[in-house]
Amino acid sequence: MIAWKRLRLAAVLGLTVGVLGGGAATADSAYRAFGDRGRPQDARRTITVVMRDNSFEPQTIRVRAGETVRFVVRNEGALLHEFNLGTREMHRRHQREMQTMFEHGMMTATSIGPVPAQGGSHAGGPHAGGHQVGHGQHMAQMHHNDPNSLLLEPGQSGELVWKFTRAVELEFACNIPGHYESGMVGRVAFVR
Ligand SMILES: [Cu+2]
Image: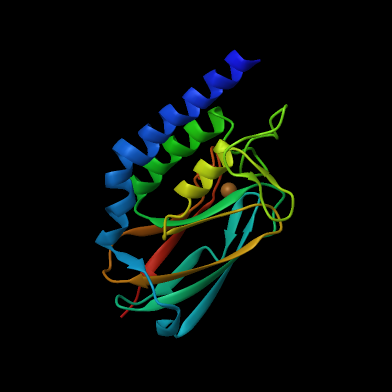
C-alpha cells in the first residue's frame, strides 16, 4: 500500500515537471501571440458559450482585435469539458497533456481530480466544504489556472475575461481526450 502510494506520488511529481516545467514555458506563454488575461472593467461585451456532450454553442465567435470580451461559459453536458482559446497547434499540445493527466487519474470523464484515495489524502487536506483534495486535483487546477482556459465539471459555470490583441487563426476548443475530434471546436473570427 505504501509502495503503491509512493509510486503514484512519484508519477504525479514526474508529470508535474513534464507539464509545468518543460512544455509549460512554451505552452503557457504561447497565448501572448494573440492576447492576454483581460481586465473585467474593460469588457464591453459578454459572450455566453454553452458546452454539451460534445459541442459548443455558438460555433463561431466574432471579435475585434484590441477588444476585451467577458466569456460566460456553462457546462450543460454530463461530462467534464474545457473552454480553451488557442491556435490549432496549442490545442494539439494541450490535448497531449490532457491525455497524460487522464492516464494519471488527475481527471476523469466527469470530474477534476482522482477518485478519492483510500486511506485519506495528504497535501491540501480537506478543503472548505469537506472536499478531499489530492495531488491530482491540485495539479489539474494549477494547470488550469491558465488565463486562456476554463475547465468545468457538469453543471458548472465559469467566467473568463480575455483581451484579443492580434488577429490570428484562432479556435476555442475542448481538449479532453476525444472531444476535439468529435466536434468540440469552434472558430474565433476577427471582424473589423
Ligand atoms: Cu469536452
